[in-house]
Length: 474
Image (cartoon, rainbow, N blue to C red; front, top):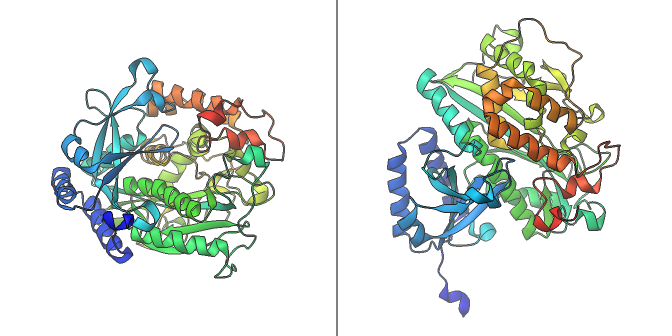
């Protein structure tokens, strides 16, 4: 009888997809934010089955944080939300802890009730200083500002699509329990393309892809990957800020679907010794109106000079920005040439060991694929950095050294990052120092010499895994 007392919002998957795609189209069309805000507040007020609004934001390392606000409270107080920034790693100090939380009404999502619970909707927040200005450690705001600058000053839209790999492990909280359990247990030992329909990995992929589709991702294909129990679900390119939000949503929905099946979806770059790691190949392009600025049928590999300049600028900054694209101790295990690792600072249409690949493309799909990025990178920081470097970075005067490779450990990457005047100017001195300190803090809890076997500490103290209790076990 108790269940009958609750009549919270539940929407069919077909209707969810329609609602989320419509909201995404509004956002991509740059519908005025005050118009969208009015629509969303009216919807929240008029829809009786909504009990709470989940507002999310990401910290400097890219970890997603969520707060649930009572719907009636949020409608009245959306312009005056605050939270304790000192509780967020890499944000404010305890003595100056309060920060504001704005609402990006354009980034509004309807959720599958069977996965996230009935009666809730989801929206991305914007971290603000006390005076309402964007908070410098909120890289989502900085990416959004960069995208808007490109559009208003040059009429250019930056597009991105990400190929995010993950592992499915048996049991909930497998990462947090790694120290006690001494390793991970594959949920399935099947692999690339040939997994049977009833296999636990295939069932997880099917369920997660349904959620992804319902949330407006515009799915393309999904499949098991090369390593046992590894998966990838691909979706179409979109405007870069939307794309960055979708990375966070992708990881969130995968983790939630896995948890409901008593499993763990892990995006550690190299959680298991001896098999391929997880990458997040990031496809980028620039468009002006309906023209893809990276396409030239007469250019080398059908890429325009604009596209090749974009690549050369990124390669020129490769070691400076490596810590941003590979932001954990564990991510340097992935950059191992024995496992198709993209550790060579060069571009190629065919060599998958190259940091940048030029996929086969046409007028619509021509793009640049950055392969060296790991799925645990802060998506806003990574895309902000790649776009800034590719468009505004220094163009090398001569050919790059083809033998040059990315760092093979986080200490060298931190040293390159700290020494880079370019990255310091890009992020600002305070954020540059904060980020390097965060990465060093985790690195110093792990062995300086990695060896060949993955160590418990590099999982335990990973920025997407640790909690206050685990952090104190050092």
